View 1 (cartoon, rainbow over the protein chains, first blue to last red):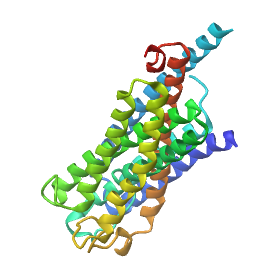
View 2: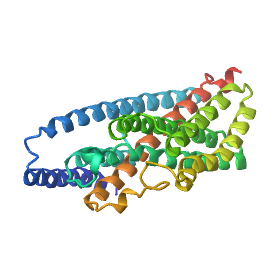
View 3: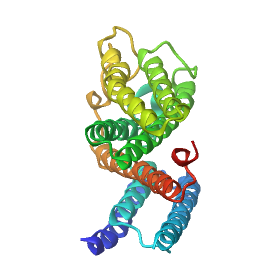
View 4: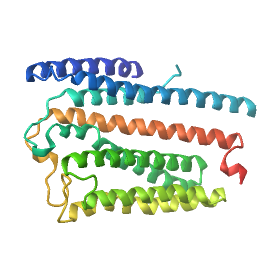
Length: 71
Length: 228
């Protein structure tokens, strides 16, 4: 289940990307540089996610330390 | 890289899909003054859906807390309340930007706007109520009871009253039709629904971090509960 989802998500994303780019080429939007805006959005979101993962790491550590103290 | 639960990968994946897909897919062009900003359906609207779902979770945990008086239920209720309010503020600020371009002003006398603003204040009050009572058990009980009463009022404010009113410029409330009444490109649903699920999961993730942090704090004797 876990692995299926991990592999399914990137492949679904790539499929959508290719479909979207195809649609874009058809509609003549390919000159609008929309890909730059998408890049900016993806960078911002990646930073937010990386920060969440960092918090996750820190809290894992705190939880571990707490458990050891209680023993 | 810490091990993440599968639903966190799901959240990241769905949001990335919605962020990129929302920019790329073809949207209907017969939407008048909305023009390309109809794409905000993939970014602004999921904030409100996440808020409603998270606050519903908060309500459920408050009921569970009142049934059992287990501190962890209260932590979940409170964290979901805070994360849901956060989503609501994202919704209101993005909405103001969208309104400036579509309606020419960031704030109108639309009942949906005013309802949402009062609704958010209600949840800020929940936050203040819990933080301002010194006795830990009393503060949890009062906050939980407040939360149980407030959710139906909140839903009435942001959903029912706007639908009943004669005047609204929001789609699907008052005298307007929903987006689904337009001759919509069905593609939009393929991005809109994943966006809702993804953003809701992300805000639940934020809430879960808060729950764990509060628990660590209280276990190590640093929290409000131990100091007071």
